[in-house]
Length: 111
Image (cartoon, rainbow, N blue to C red; front, side, top):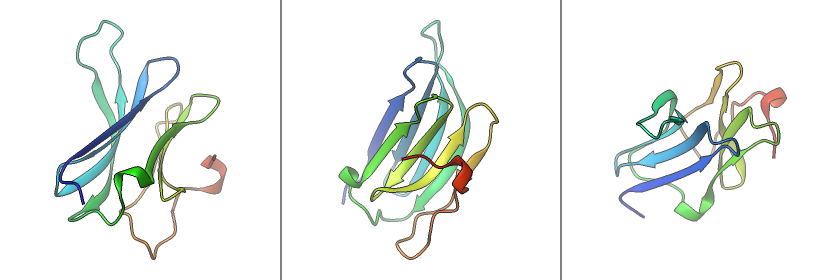
């Protein structure tokens, strides 16, 4: 397993990014607002995904934006696990477990 991991996917418009960061102990999925001026942006939301060792490999993680660019999601092992709705400000997700199902509402889901 890897000690540190950082993955991000910027929205096509370039105003937000979905970010997964793991520091060897804790992994979180963030909604990050990018700055138009090139200065530091800010974290608009955070969902803790893992505490302790990762139970998945880095290549089993994917961050995707939906076609409307209003939702960004974290997929683990091809399953939608966490989601930020940029328009409503809603955040959905929970700590990852192989035995749990995602708690992202079906009306927010996309593939």
